[in-house]
Image 1 (cartoon, rainbow, N blue to C red):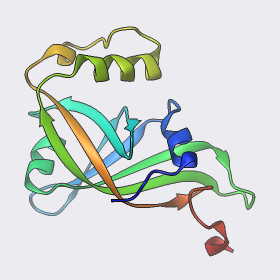
Image 2 (image 1 turned 90 degrees about the horizontal axis):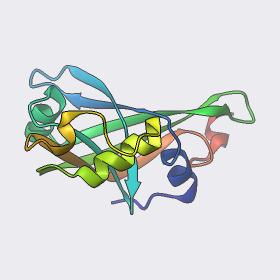
Image 3 (image 1 turned 180 degrees about the vertical axis):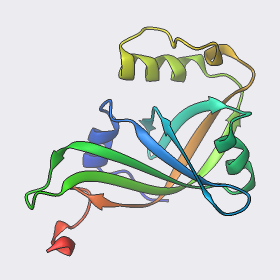
Image 4 (image 1 turned 180 degrees about the horizontal axis):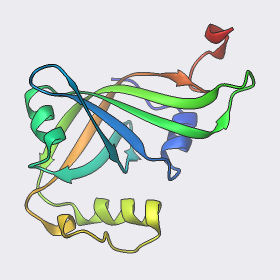
Length: 144
């Protein structure tokens, strides 16, 4: 497990969405857009337990999150964060998490979807294995 550096925590604190990659049973990629939030050294998001991403993660917990920053590096590259990790599915609704995500991304006090209180709601907790991308979270000299 990797600790999440301050610069990564800062980007995860913005309203930048994450593209989450999981592996379908045949090995092909499946990509979804999710709202994420950092909690300690984990990255969390919610989903419906019946979703393709949850079914995939139940079979193979390896996950990749890609988050684009609004800034460019000193060399002109679009800054982006790539997190490779291992997901744990935590069944059951977590209205507090869903409401924090709604507040962060759309300014609502309560998550607008019925998933918020649904027994089909799952919290996906990503333990970070590796951080890469372009930004202050890596050595940009690698791109010289």
